[in-house]
Structure formats: structure tokens, C-alpha cells
Image: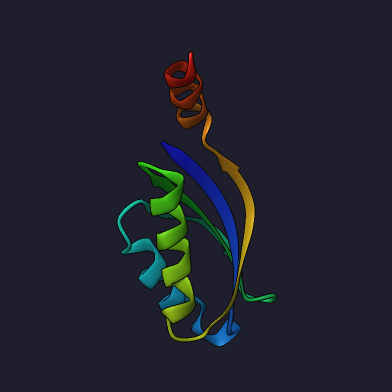
Length: 87
């Protein structure tokens, strides 16, 4: 499983609509937002890093999203599986 945290820059006057669109995506949870900056913090839980990337890439297609910034990603169990397979 991959767990990622991202900050989304959106038009401040569209924060509620963008937050709702993000929250409607499977595996995405809106953690908070700031109307003065237009920033939204989200987490993604996905089965793999590749699926997490695909989900994050879809954010830019949401109307009034300006930018998508990856802050953190954890793929510990994937690394453990890879390491175990190589032994």
C-alpha cells in the first residue's frame, strides 16, 4: 500500500467545489483547507505507488485546480515485498 500526502493549490473562491471533487475520488481524503491561500491538504491510500500517482495526476483535471504538490509518500510494504523477492 502507498500512502501519500499532497497540497493542492486551487482558486480560493472554488475551494468547496474542489474539495468535494477530491473527496469523491476513491482512496482520497481531504484533511483540511485554507480559504485565504486556496490550499487543500489531501491524503491518498492506494494499493501501489503507480496507482497513487495516477490518482494524483487526475487532480489537475479538476476545474479550478492550479497546482498539485507531493509532500510525502510511504511505500514501506512494497519495499519489503521487493526485498523478500530478491532474497
